[in-house]
Amino acid sequence: MTWPFRHVLLALSLGTAACGPAPETADEHEHGEHEHGEHGEHGEHGEPHADEPAHEAPPRRVRLSPQVLADAGITDEPVRREPLTETIQVVGEVAADPERTAQIAARVAGTLEAVHFVEGDAVKAGQVLATIRAPSLGSLRADVASLQARAASARSNRDRLDTLSGRGMASQQELTAAKAEASALDAEARAAGQRLKGLGLGSTGGNVVFSLRAPIAGVVTQRGVVVGQAVTPETMVATIVDLEQAWFLARVFEHHVGQVHVGAAAEVALNAYPEHRFAGKVINLAHQVDLATRTLTARVALDNRDDMLRLGLFGSATIAVPTSAPAPDAAPLVIPRSALTEVHGQPAVFVRHADDDFELHQVVLGVSAPGKIAVLHGLREGERVVTNGVFTLKSVLLRGTFAEDHH
Image (tube, rainbow, N blue to C red):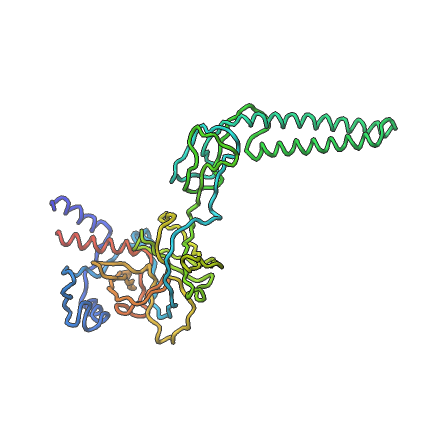
């Protein structure tokens, strides 16, 4: 590494207003020994296992300036003893929510002049998707104008006969027929006008090019037409899916059906993102078994965090099931999954102290439940673990280690 790059790293480390790792005192070291037991983290005699990679122990403490603390949005929670619900593991895939899906038909007959999207495009509500040359629009406008004129004439004739009937100069039968004709033509004219209005068009003008617009915002998942294609009102042009929220279709085997309930907490891990977890809950359980797989579908609603969800992604879900709670003294120490990170391949958390120092604790993990995980070793009840801003602390800690190694 060149000397100028070393100076940049040192400047970054010092420039965070004492954001680097703080030196460890003898008391802190003693606390660490206390915390991890008399045998240490690696083995019975404090030596690393033969199959573990050898590396220098990273610094354990980080101190951030008040400004960095505020910018990072760091939050923490106390370590508690609480029972973890039993869970079952099921597999499944991401699917669209039908309530957030729109299939867009051409709506008019004509020829497709232009298409303004491709599959995968994000579109806004009201955005023009395609333009269609539709000669039938001229005929529809002509029909509206003709019907409106005929309706006006029929109303005039009705009013004239009404006056004559009052003077005994027209029969009641003539008046009744005039009223019926006026009412029928008024209804036809209104219906033709509604057809134009439904297409977003006025009853006047000679434009025969129709602009097809997106009814919802979302992502185009399917395109069904090409330029120059003749279309009918029923021709499917595109499918749009709003992926702000999606479903995970979990396949529950028959022997687990009695354990899964609507409203149960769930945590989804997708093969595409093995280090991420998506929290959700069961919103629906199907009532018909798939005869090929002997499973029922449990729908788990997921928020699309950081736009990561893609339709069809495969993964597994951990679903909480009812269970009897253990005695309070038998309950394990539990932390939120968001508090967990990895340093040198080992699970770890950051503990916040009263002086706003943050200490790295390597932990031994136990069983997990949606959003939570048990800690067998490395923490004490009541210690406050960082649940938001963990990445910032880890970055500062490792940056300090990197700068020291190259000093």
